Image (tube, rainbow, N blue to C red; front, side, top):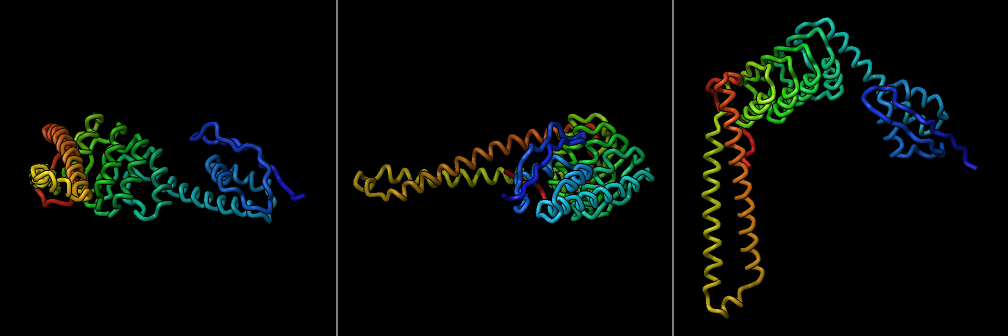
Length: 315
């Protein structure tokens, strides 16, 4: 008979999960830990303490024990990294350094440490090239932080995806009063509109600086107009082609290749779909423009004239 061991019932002790457990299961220790059970265990035990208990109950020369040892080492290393950021941030009132935007572990650890920090009130990361990933990590911290009031992210190569996550955080943050995003390639009008929407639910922010960014919606409006004219031209051409066939002598119409008729009809359906998308895009553009105009009139979003940086998706 193959030797077996029993996984004990393991309850999560942390506060971020509820009712998470691994049921008693008999596992052949000569086989690899089943993927689904491995995943369940890792989800149910975010800390190292329970993994240490699990490791102690496993035969040490098994694949299962090796899996747990690797995961335990990974989590212990992450916890040490997290503690280093907690200790570092606890001595600061102004944050001037942020992890490289390609280092996922450092970004996560820094964000989690900053989220509950009680000493930092200002962030000045101008010209630090944190990028969109760095901005996203910072946004995760801002969702929970309750002391930061002033943020400077000038010229950080933050694109529309980073701005969208930042805007989402601003919807719930109630302490930030000023943000400087000037000089970022944040999607022009689209990035500004996303921020303006966040201001609809945020009452504490008094100023978002978007200097050096062209946030005019006119280029998008003009593109929509050109696209609509082209759609109309193509639909007229298709209508003429189908009309010519319909008005032709009966034998000619009947002899028309079925594939060609289907192709023309499919093209017309595609144009109808594009036109519907364009209708929706124009409606959204008008709504976004109204929200942005409101924020500009209130001087909650400010900007000067600047070169047009990469914009957002038109449809």
